[in-house]
Length: 397
Image (cartoon, rainbow, N blue to C red):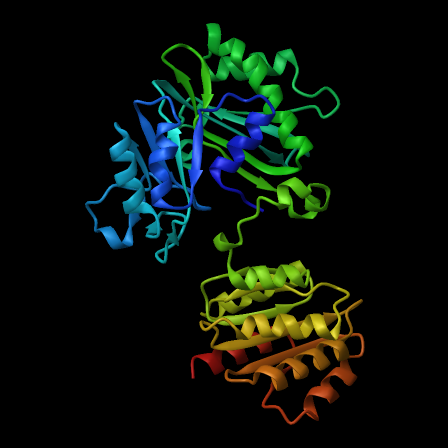
């Protein structure tokens, strides 16, 4: 689960991290009061969407010469003007795709005198099985570009879970970021704080880009991106309360209600599969035969008829879907349950696109019998290769 920048900063501030004063607003007429409550005279007006690259983004409605989704304001009047122009419009960034995201919230923040911009993130390093810091002196840039062109400027530092962030770890991070004096002292406090927040709140990513050294020599968290492990949200009601469903795909929200692993994609062949590995293989073979999957959908090993019906309805609700491939290898999941769920869904929502069903495993013959006797226009397949070829052919006419 992702949260907005202002929410991430509030969370980190509660742990003691240095962040600027700021106010989140939902309406343009709230901008003046928000700016007046800040020290000024420099203000930063930031679009709050779940996507990066906001500063370089462009608003669909404002033309190519308009400023991006993060703007400086040198007066209260300018902060109000920016707010009126940004709220309600669609911001397109490198991470939103061409459709962009509507800006429904802004964060008006006190400005900062920046001396240097640094990069810092904390994530789970699966190569060593530990939480790790990733830091670089090249803040404000895409870390992927830094990794490609100047990898020597990145330090990845795994943390011993029993010891936590030690003085030796802090020294390594300070040295890598070239922090001295007051900034280095701030690092001694800040780095353990960030690690504590990451672990206690079950984060999957904490990215600060940039972490700045101000002209007074102190550190400040200038931007913050935080993602949480969805499997641990039951432990954190306070985090769950931060969820902004307007930033999420409606189909993914519906899938979460049924505990379905669903991710919307850009293709036109809907997929319903049991097991993440088989789902990935199904997507790969669809691409192999020249088409694109419209989603990743794993119904799991113990799905009920009702859950399968819900999954099928989610797929058919996507107007981009021009064909559906159901690919089930029944172990715990029984093929007859899948068949009953698919038929129930088709009878409820109708079938307007080609449907290919491949069943194998537990109760496979019963599952095939249920589908064959349903009277539905379903294309059966013998194996995954056969199923992929048939659905791609059906979609392409």
